[in-house]
Structure formats: C-alpha cells, structure tokens
Image (cartoon, rainbow, N blue to C red; front, side, top):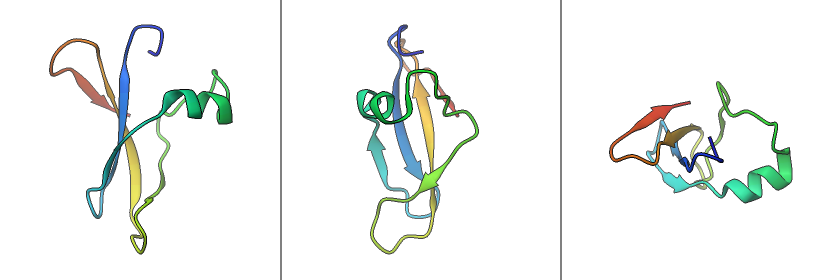
Amino acid sequence: MLDRGWSFTITCGACRLEMRVDTDKIIKAKGRDWSPWGKSAACRRIGCLGRMRLRAYAPGPNEFIGI
C-alpha cells in the first residue's frame, strides 16, 4: 500500500480524535512487514479510554477503507 501511494489516518471511536499517521515512524518502530489489519491502539487523548483504528486512503479521490 505504501509503494502505491496510500496514506493513513487513525481515529478514536469514543472521542473522535483524528490524526494523520506517520508511516515512516511506524516502519522504523515495527518494520516494513508489520500489518495494521485488525489492530487498534489506545487513544492518544489524555483521559480518553477509547481505541483508535486506522483508515487507509487510496491515491484516488474519495477512496478509503477501514482497516
């Protein structure tokens, strides 16, 4: 997906905090073979107990999938 120009955001299901994903940082920490499919993370907002989910955006307009 990265080689094809996809971009990513992460959104909390509880507080709706939305952030852009720094893919270079993830690759450095997890390795290029790491897959985000079906994974979530704790919300980054102080005091929120929600979970954050990734959304992938294709290079074309209005194309995205929740991962």
